Amino acid sequence: MAKQSSRNLSRRQARDLDVEISFLEGLVRRDPSYIEALQLLGDNYSDRGRPAEGLCVDERLRQLRPDDANVRFNYACSLALNRLFERACEEIDCALDLGYRDFKWLQRDADLAELRKHPSFKKIKARVKALQTIETSED
Image (cartoon, rainbow, N blue to C red; front, side):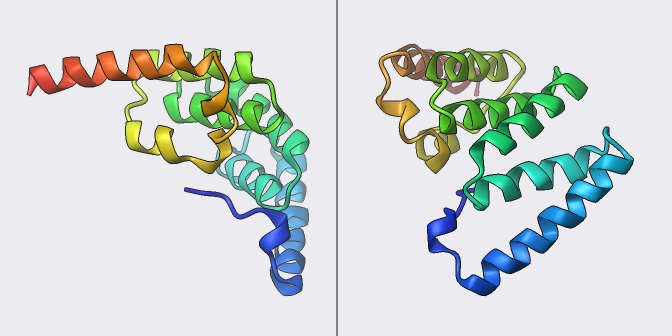
């Protein structure tokens, strides 16, 4: 899902998001391995324009669920938002290894807009094309 930048939030939306962030932070303090709360918190940090904090959450999720393709993809998005492009490509590669196959989203996710312009992304594009070819031939 595309994330709305904090610049586009109304005052009320920003306030509501801040309240939700505070609530989720409290939940995570009480239960540091509460996956769903961490996922929501990471999304909310990104929505609020706090990519460094979102990255910390996604790093924790990656530790808790290292074999989850979606967790690895979201971690790649956080890395890209923090301009860590090489690492972001490595994580996308890992997500693909683990079975991530939402190729359309990979091409339009706003979090990856800058990464798609980076030279390292060429390998990802080539790998996705090869995977699409394989999956099409298997159908």
